[in-house]
Length: 563
Image (spheres, rainbow, N blue to C red):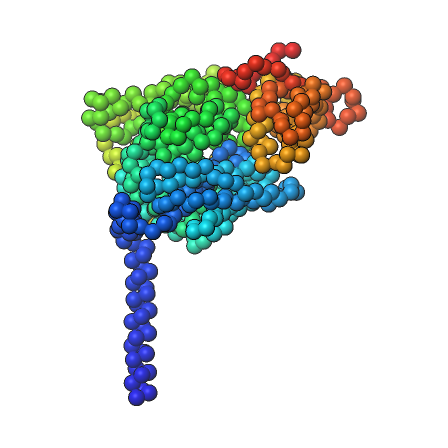
């Protein structure tokens, strides 16, 4: 009898192991994952699904010192608490905050919440979690390596309408980075879904595949570039912008030039942020405007952009398209969609010596490095144009134009690993299986002479608007006015490049005018960088910060002042 039991164990143990292995393989199969998502969507529509997270928290890049975090549940969470904390990476004190999130009911089965983390300037690591009586999340961590000189960025685009292929690409990405490892950030260059108005598209084509990869969206902040399929341009309440308000809509955001708007209404969004040793500018290709053009010129001229080792622009529609559907290209007028990028923006890219322009839209891979020689060597430029539209959508294989400029063309699905390490940029494109299809490396000891606009190279005066409310949000009442003064001082140091900052008495009076608890929401200041008359002073230049009274902040931008 004992021998019989041993034989049964010897037979059953391998069978159980094989069964578990089979379940593991099936769980990772893209088709099985798709069936799970479709079944869950049907249960949602029938209101049979229990109260769970539909979309776990997604962290979006929101400038240099903030993150926008959004999540969605199948029912109301009641009064959830969003908790975040930051550990100082440069000696700054730790911060710990509890925030009541913003809430929006999309329909009976889609309840969306969002909150802002920040400011976290100088923090080396940020953590966050969501909790309520019935639902909660683990503690997630963002290492914030993108704010140092090194960063590893995953670049993808145009996965819309191809969730099965997208999952295959993501499986290749997961193998590339290794078990448990995540990139420092994700740059998605647009067209995440086929139809912005479809809740099912957002779930199946974007969020579920990325969530199944293994926590990428929770730990790697997402820098999202709007594509023509991603947002509803109707400027009416109740439109379909359920998932493209990460840079507008719910919050007043001075950096992006937007005003608070009703739930779901549309605003153009464009922004800039730091990615390691690079500065990234994101543009909205769908909606050219005077406001965006002014923003682009202002950012290209900014000290932060000019001082960066590498200058990158991301815009969904490429300036130079070669592959498309011939009928829609010629007869439907789609050849004109990106003309403003080529005719207006590309000139500015060359003028301000952008290093890399990243686009999607065209569903394949192309890369070109163009050196333009000019009569004046100082005005010559070298730009790399890259199209990365192969994360899952149907491929474009028919040529409609030939610009005679692309060094590499690959008509297959792919992803890109962008590594920024101090003075070196490494761009490596992989096919869905993880094989290398293209490599590019840019190395420089420093910016060409005369190209980097050092803050110490000139005496200059500029006027700025500082959004104090956003920068002192969460500070205790008895510390707000002193905190506002420190914010102004730090703002002057960052924008003028001087350690010596002197606050004018009238500015100090304006900040404290309503007491220690209530500081102005916005304040207009004049920053004057001047030479230090004291020859023995350690700092050769200092910044004098004065108060500029204004009747309204509407339409005010950063401007040079002649003194």
